[in-house]
Image: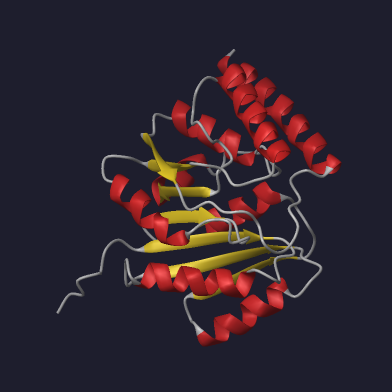
Length: 241
């Protein structure tokens, strides 16, 4: 007999860097949410060279839950590299990714699944965004800059709550070169230019970070993001010439 919740096969990708305080709770949240939506799923945690016990915790939970798989970077490669390695390592029909900091209510992935019919990529936007003022201001400025340089793709480009068909990843994996904070912007711009259908969904369960420290505001991360952005803009000009 077919399960009533068989649904699509689903990969959940979680990039994580020094999230030892959050990752166990995050994985419990994901297991609870996904089991209520489909029966064929995997959870891929990409530990991006954490200096804490993030990888150890994931490995231990993987012994208890066969659906959990760890991908480990020997050193920190950047947010985009962690997301990219998780996406290309996914094996299921649909691929969802979110961060490991527990700022999202992962149960809301059901809203994205409801919109994937007729779409190739469903992008969440935080409504409202529960971050400190400067992070919200920087995020709006970044999204505005991307829109000015490449045209509109999404209202909340870096929202880490996205669902896509695996065919999108297979089509773009050799084109997207950014491996830092510019990854999401390049991925969306490339997806739009490739003709993929993009839908947007509000994510209302965004909440403040309660443990661990964000790394997006580090000067090195910001400098790398702008370098990658310039290189991406130059690549597109070259490709279209």
